Image 1 (cartoon, rainbow, N blue to C red):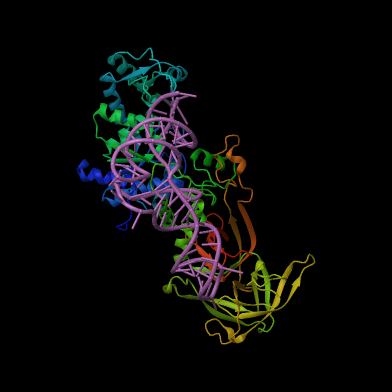
Image 2 (image 1 turned 90 degrees about the vertical axis):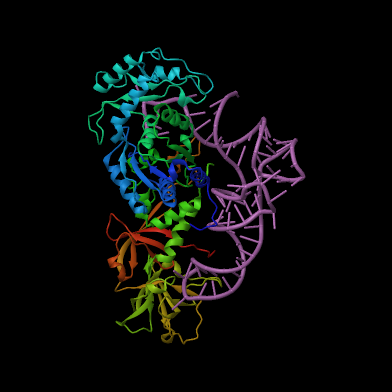
Length: 549
RNA sequence: UGCCCUAUGGUGUAAUGGCAACACAUCUGCUUUUGGUGCAGACGUUUCAGGUUCGAGUCCUGGUGGGGCAACCA
């Protein structure tokens, strides 16, 4: 945190709270994911905000799984969320909780509202209730059961809990105001009957609380001072406050910020789940997914994601962030920390005619020019190398820095070589380029005086490792796949979002590469070993390329 | 024809009634054994109409645009 950095509206609000002596100077936040899907980059924003703010003010953050809907929630998601959170670099230092831990407390709180005449059991169908709710422009109508006595309501509610009634046959509703402009205050549902097995409480319960009657109360029970969430919950805040006031419990306070949107992707768990279920991607952690696990498998670093979120800012207006900013944050981090290695993705043979046959010499190469402490490694060099097919052109103009008839290039960390001739196959495709090298042009001790404009990466052929490399592009071809009224986002899936290269050649040091390290393949981009298949590398991103050939 | 939120370069985000700025993107140039990095520079901004004020991006009124709200989802 730099001192002169401007403060966003939530920081200003907390500053004011603290100045007013609110909550005894404590800042206690929470991150409340529903375990019904994997975390994505939008959650990373929520995480960085809630955990970041607590840390900034010397407070703590709770992780709370918001598991009030047994038909959508699974243990698999709980585990994945824990892993993603830890990987991102955050720890639930306020503790880990489940809303389901509070089912008894919530039941008791509901009873209190019933006894106070502020909640009632409604026997109507969901259709009838929906019908009576009115519309945003018309007030709703009272339920015929609205004026049941507290005693009758208590009896009915306890029997709901005891399993005496069918699923969906009765609900508990708060008695507020059927004519309120805010639809959420028109006698909202508190509990519904569901005979479903819960991932934690099993079959203990057949009534489950709704979000609005669980979330705020859980915040309150945990002593959360600042409950931060996204804009769509703004209209829920009056209800959040109503429950707290009428239950007379700890006054947690909700503040909303704009969620993160990224272009060229979708960001709802439901849509991401559809991509997974329909097989458009290889699971939640497909490297093209905007999920945390997808970004991890893609080769993103936690630091780059945190930096990205920091750059994006916190405000209340809708936004669509350019995915280029995410890529920039990755490159910015990786440029400083990624080990440089040589790899050829689309190899053709380079034969150095005047280099002794069978000779191999070891040449040192920098591990990272941005990091003086990173040292060097030894690269085998010999008469036959692989170079990138696109680094040779039969006809080239003055702006072409790479190899071509009449040109001299530097082989990175090795020698300068001069074109002699080349060999084509029957189809006219170049398969081999022949050159001569300048013995006195060795990297670091070049006395040749010969100029070379370009530098090529290479891999010595007899030592090369074979690998598969997967290149990724944006999953959707449209910047806003979700933004078309007439068309489904599915119609914008980019058919070229993955390209599999099977004939790649890597330098021998990559034999020990493990997932978790992202490398820079010199001149090509950033790559990381895949977590699922050995011998496969995923491209995290390209390098910036300002060459306009 | 309701209510709530919102409106600043292409994209984001600052300004706290007093000279509109920063990042990303784009474009130039320099450096470079990665056409990477780095460095220097350029381009470009307050939704509209009124009002308050010596002074308005900021406050007020109205309009317009965008988002949200009528799940036994969260």
